[in-house]
Image (cartoon, rainbow, N blue to C red; front, side, top):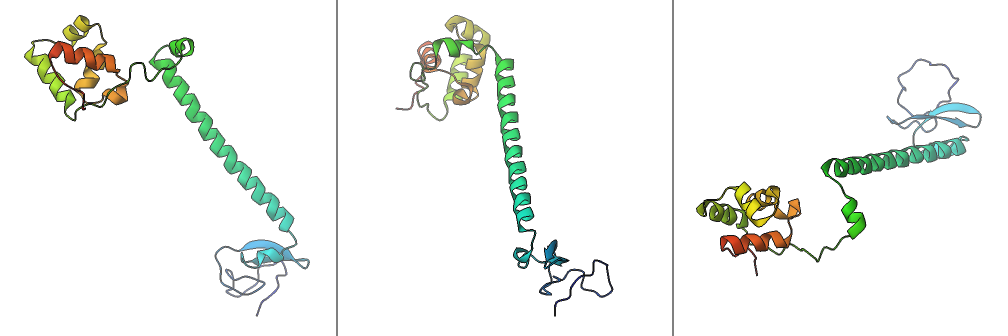
Length: 173
C-alpha cells in the first residue's frame, strides 16, 4: 500500500520505495502529485504535476550535451589548426589548391621499405647523400624506408626517383 509524504522524514525502512506505488527503486525523484510532494519511481513520474519542469530539465540537459559536443569539436578543430601551423606554411594549398591525382602514391609492394634501405646501403649512400642527389626531402626517404610512405604523404614522384636511382621495382602491379 502506498503512503503519502508529509514532507518530514518519518520512521520506517521505505527510504528507497516509491511513495505512490510502493515499488522499490534506486532512481526515485521528487514529484508533486495532487498537491503532495512525493518521492516517486520513473514509472510514476508521468503523474507529476511538474511534467513541464521535467521536460524543461530534459531539454536543458540535451542542450548541455550538445554544447559539450560542440565544445569538443571546436577543441579538435583548434588542435588541428595548431598542428598545421606548427608543421609549416599551408598557404600553398590555398594558392595552388589540391590535386591528389597529380603526384599520387601508387600501390607499393609489401616490403618496399626494406628494399629501399638495402639498395641504398648497397650503393654506399647515406640518407642525406641520396636526398641531395635526387633533390628530395630526407624525411620522405626515411618515411619510405620505414614503410610509412602513405602516412607521411610521400608522392609517387619520390617513389619513381628512388626506383630509377636504386634500380628497384617498388610498385605493386
